Length: 223
Image 1 (tube, rainbow, N blue to C red):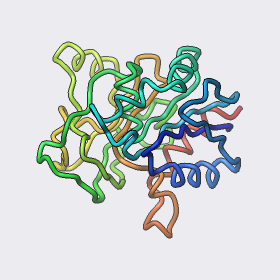
Image 2 (tube, helix red, strand yellow; image 1 turned 180 degrees about the vertical axis):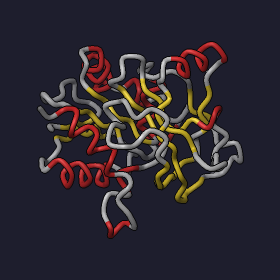
Image 3 (cartoon, rainbow, N blue to C red; image 1 turned 90 degrees about the horizontal axis):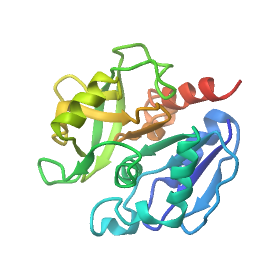
């Protein structure tokens, strides 16, 4: 599975993501700078977490208007799979690739801890290695992870099965509506999630629960 990781000023989880992708896929990902206007021919584009452009204006707002994002949008329209994690999720919503918006955490504080997620749609390219309803561990580290969508949008994404992951066991760390932790587009090839699966892929990190995101993609995108 060929992949590329988008790099913007202020993103700080790019090395974690590059490591996870190389360890699991066996191939070194390409890196694409925010001012580039082209992306190599890849199966997966990833936007990692951090604080792109210092989160000025709104989290992800400036990065969503960078030159490379126009190519990400074009590739997504052609069916290339795109994964946005944490700030990457915020960038994807700001770019219009995903519904809804990410607001300040309900407690107005940065949260960094391990939480549990429930896989509520295991029939996607990003989640097929999980069992339906499987609860798994994943780290979070964010200040603006409070997912919101208006009533009409919320009904649509719930009815369409676009909600892929929810915060589980009564732990909603940021106030996200309907406990939503990860959502995909209607076409099913773009996923945004606030938790960081790339930080739980091997025993040295305390567990391997996060590997299933990448193993799902590997099984889906490699013939």
